[in-house]
Amino acid sequence: MSSADISGSPGLAYFVLYRDGGRAKPSGIFVVDMARGHAVVWDHRQQSWSYNPDLAFRFLGECRNDDRYEPVDSCALERYAVEVTKGVPLPSDEEISQMFSAGAAGCP
Image 1 (cartoon, rainbow, N blue to C red):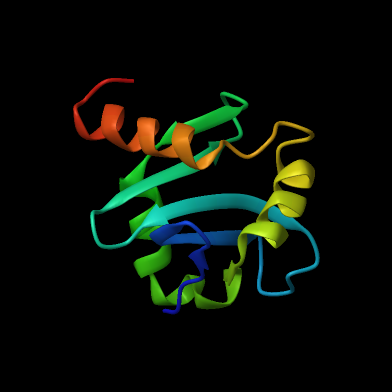
Image 2 (cartoon, one colour):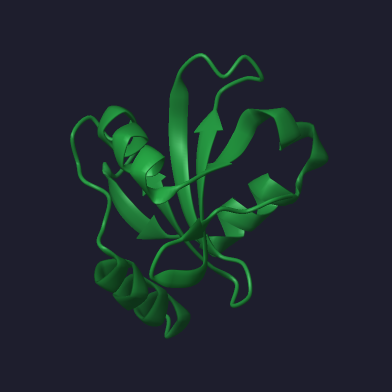
């Protein structure tokens, strides 16, 4: 698995997810810190960003999903985020860092 580093945020990777291997329409987003085991995902049910490393690493680690995601850079992810979230912006690097800290501490 490859990852796309975010400028100014070493170690983070952005992934766009697709429902199938056709990659016609993005259906999800992960922001992942591979080294520390953190991940923020777009939660369709809650219509919000949430800390969920279990989901992200399980999905990315499953070989049958290899054709259902791709690493992207921050500019591309911002464009995909508008489509996937129906207008909810991607959290800032600072907000993502706060979500990682709160999630690791067991806070929602």
